[in-house]
Length: 117
Image (cartoon, rainbow, N blue to C red; front, side, top):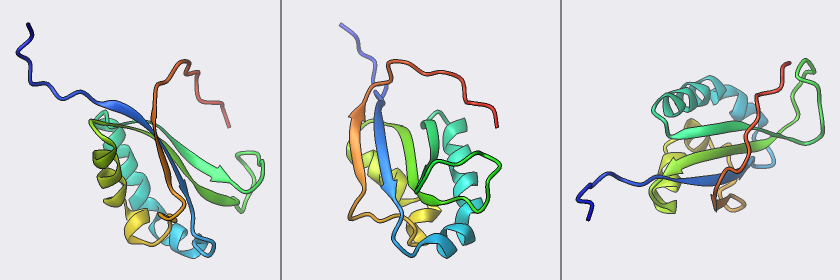
């Protein structure tokens, strides 16, 4: 019998739509959000993150038609995943629409390389 008290982390698919009028607020706190996401990734708490778009675009196109964020977060519970997202600058900056947020238990089956720009 194992006596390990190591915490088990599960994957959580987090779909975080933006509020309808969030673009100026998103841009104002985007660098802080990216620093936070990098820190979480370095700590092994995020395995994937990206933006949702209003329409398909090439990476070189501007302005970016932001619609929200999608994150695969590693946490021991849904409550921990929510707490992690609530601590993000996009929450404090009123970017994400928490009334429309969706967080699902998830298990990655296939992960390919990031497409080049």
